[in-house]
Image (cartoon, rainbow, N blue to C red; front, side, top):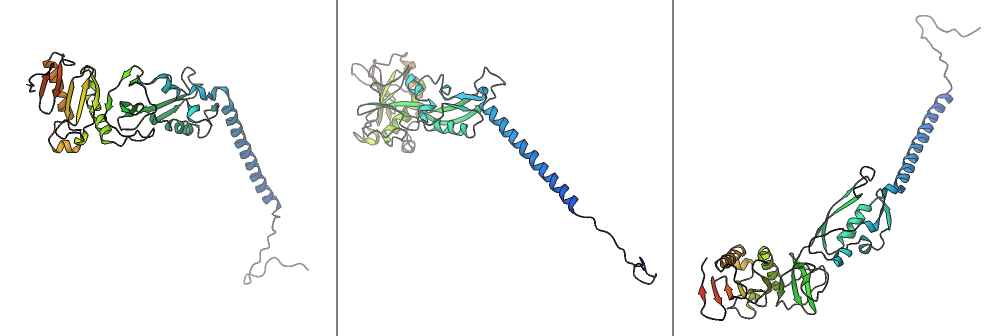
Length: 314
């Protein structure tokens, strides 16, 4: 006799349910997961393969020899220009590389930043050569250290920038291409290594004065700056800094432009240049070689040949 499916109303009801075998559901889930992995893997492989093809495409290949500054500032000589070759700055740099190579821009920036002439790499712009074939694929913007003065030292003349950093080279004459710079003489200290600050108060004074008169150098026919008496080393009663014109007129600048000069109520560099301007206008520009000296702090001039000094108040 078979088992009854249900008892009386007062008794408990028993429901018997047959379970489906789990094999089909698990297999379907595993198949979906495997398909996803295979499709995803194929897509990733396809993207990697495509990126590799694009990286190797001629349109994205750049020659290291093309990374050269075509034209620099007016003071930049061909020798300085040639030294800005990325292959010279980084001998291990590849001769050809792809614009899609990871880290290539950082490596280019590091190569240029290793050059003393380069103050900093401002930015590197990368362009897709397919968008505009007439424009370079890489545009590198550099800020250069601007030479401020030549410092006369043992064996020649050295360039120094506005921050007092010594720039490469020792020159037989104080000339940088077609640009003439003031010569600082009387420093006497040993020149530092290239790229190092010239830690000498006399050199610092010369650079500061040169920067103050830079825009008037040609007009005033300025040639050099004597800093041998900075700090009163030779004679505390004499001017600390003196400028010399091309024909030997001596311009007594006064104290070096420091905080001490300001405390002593010395004329500011701007006031000193303004007084020089006044003298040149009063003399109709006939100063170089005509006057023996101009005494800026005392507002006095003396003509050649040596005679009685004259007051020339601004």
